[in-house]
Image 1 (cartoon, rainbow, N blue to C red):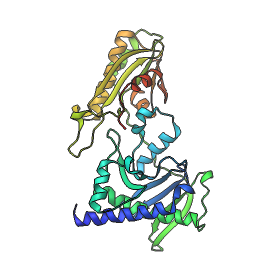
Image 2: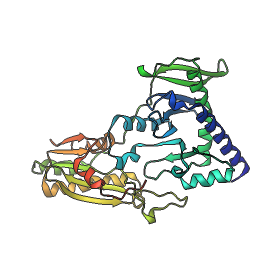
Image 3: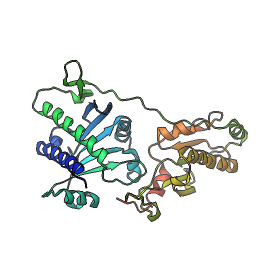
Image 4: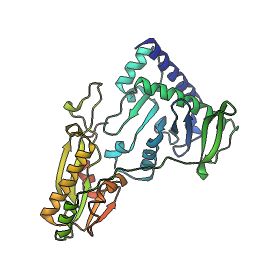
Length: 337
C-alpha cells in the first residue's frame, strides 16, 4: 500500500472511530436518512444508520440512483436468498472479528490498527458480485461522506438542528457558494427519478403471440436476479466472485419447474443480448403450451422489460415480491454468506 493510500485509509478509520464513539444507532434507525451534496463530485449521497434493533451496527452510503435500492428493499419482502440483488451501497461496519471479511482483516493489519471487541471495516455491495472490500476511490468517497455525516448527526443529537424524521423529513448538507460555508437544512425527502430499461419486441413476435391458443396456466419468471453461490471459474482477478444469474420458469398451479438455468452473464456481449434471449425463452415456451393466463415477475424492473411483449395479448403481467414455486427452487441452492 502506497503512503498516500495509507493516509487516506487511516483518515477513514479515524472518522469511523469517531462515529462509533457517538453511537448514532442509539438515536436513529434505518428509516432516518441524511443527505449530503458533494461539491467535489457534484453528486448526492444518502446515509442510513443501521443497528437500532441491535443486530448489525453500521452506516450505509448510497450514491445517487442507488437510493432506489434502499427503498425497494425497505418496501418489499423479498426472499433472503436474493436480497443481495436489491442492495447496492458501501457500508461502514462495526462487527466482531469473526464477522469481518478476511480481505478487510488484511487491510487492518497493513494499516497497523488494533481493535478489541468491535472491528471496523468497509464493504462494497454491487449487484452480481459477492460483497467486497472497497477500492481507493471508494475510500475517498467514504472519507468525504462520513465526515459530513458525522457533522450532521452531531447537530441533531446536540439539539442544534430539529428534524422530524417521523414526518418524512431528512437532514441535508451542502456548500453554499454565496455564504462560502456549509449549510445544514431540513426538507422533505426528494429522490432522483427512477428510470427502468424498456425492451421493444419485434412486431412479428407479437403477431405470433396473438395467434397462440389460450391456457389457464400461471407462469412465474425470474431472469434478472443473481443467486449468491460461489463458482470457481467465476472468480475475478481482484479476488471477487461473480455470482451466476438464475433464469427459472415455474407453473404455479401445477407446481412444475419448467426451466432452471444458472447463467454466466460474461458469455453475452451486453445485458441487452441476455434480455433478448430471456424473452425468446418465454416465447418458445408459449409456442408449446399456449399463452398463460398470467405471468408473475419479481419486481418493477422485470415488469418494464416484459410489458411490451404482452402489449397485444390478454395475458396479465403482475409483480409479486414472492414467487411461490421459484422461491422454493431458490431455497435449494447452497447459498454463500
